[in-house]
Length: 194
Image (cartoon, rainbow, N blue to C red; front, side, top):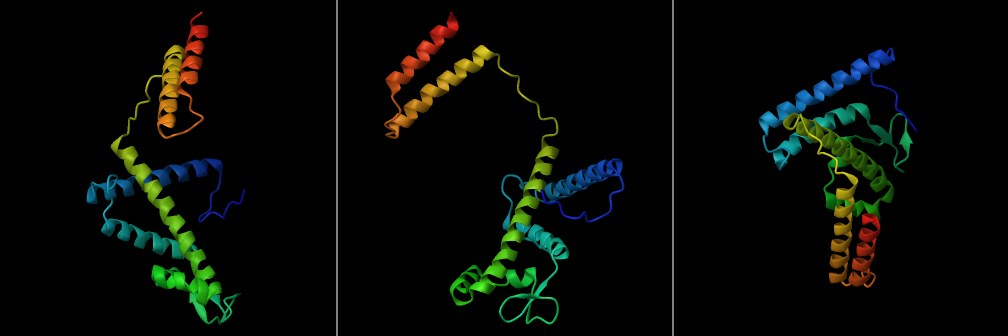
């Protein structure tokens, strides 16, 4: 498994524990702020809020992913390239203009697509983490339901088998034989009851 170099130094496992705790606390504070500014964040995140969050993630993403220079053939070069591909450059293309590059300039399309895809995943991961933290704030004492005993679980499972068979049969699934399924479930119940 590839692990990127840490963004800051970690001196020991104890320090790693401390750093992970403070990271969680910071994310919780951010989630609390977002919820105070946008109470509907978890149900429906308005476009303006998502855009502002994305702008913030863009700043950090660009810090972590410095611009790469390319020559006229769209090969990366150390210095003096014709184009410096930043996140802003990659996102400056409308979806239509970006799509047209697939045929007119496939190499540039590939380079820009890589940046757009990585940034999209970065935003998605950050949004997921923020939503998870916000949910934890709103429901801090999430209680686990009690575990059914085996007999109750079996009954629920068998009822589910019958229901699924009925639904599959209604959709036209030829493998869903309701009569045979009911007979098999009844036989299972008889054996279990002995």
